[in-house]
Amino acid sequence: MTMLIRVLPCATQFIDHLDQALRQAPHAQRLTMKQRYLLAFVISAMILTQKLCWATMERRSLGQYTSAALWWMFYRSEIVWHLLLRISVLVIIDRYGLSKGNLLIDDTGRSRSKRTKKIGKTHKIKEKKTNGYINGQELVFLVEGLF
Image (cartoon, rainbow, N blue to C red; front, side):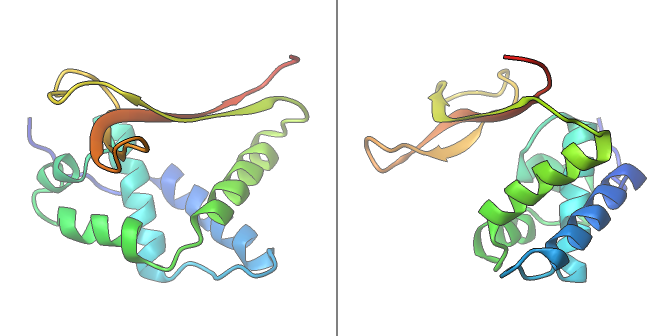
């Protein structure tokens, strides 16, 4: 299945709200235009392909975005990721008017297997025990309700 992934308007709006919130945060750098566009593309690609896989994004964009460029943005760019996560959660809470709930973060790196083509949402993660890499899953959930 071949398709050209275009940036979805909902992803652009989310990144715009995120950038505005980042500007107001102390010690935060605003996102560059390239970072904003690539983040919106990655969100759109994840929605459309239901995967977080650089190679899949490259193939589905018909080579418009290389996996190397996407990899570089996430691993080498000067984005303060922990601040971006915190502010993106605040943007979602504000956008949907949530007043209570729990944010559940699973950072245990669920190890799956060496061949994970048929297992959804897997990617390479650093294995803490051996200092190597495995295919696995790390999940973040925003759950609304009383607990």
